[in-house]
Image 1 (cartoon, rainbow, N blue to C red):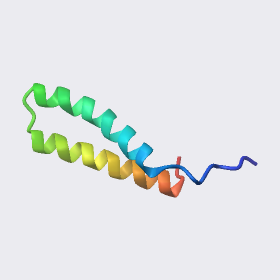
Image 2 (spheres, rainbow, N blue to C red; image 1 turned 180 degrees about the vertical axis):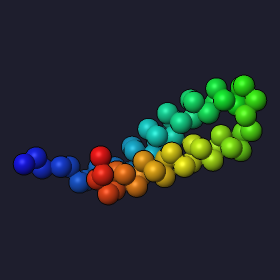
Image 3 (cartoon, rainbow, N blue to C red; image 1 turned 45 degrees about the vertical axis):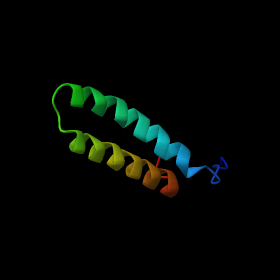
Image 4 (cartoon, one colour; image 1 turned 135 degrees about the vertical axis):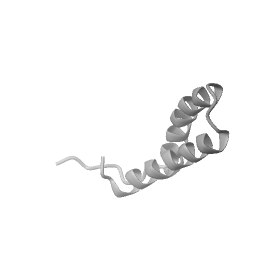
Length: 58
């Protein structure tokens, strides 16, 4: 019924997810979490966002 825009820029999804996760993990690092775990969470969020954006699951 609706023509979904398939020409999205994948960087938009990755950067948006990384910024969102980065804010949350920055707070966690300030509370004592390992920066490496925080970086891993941020990268994982960006990869999942790219996957969802490319497959059109949401």
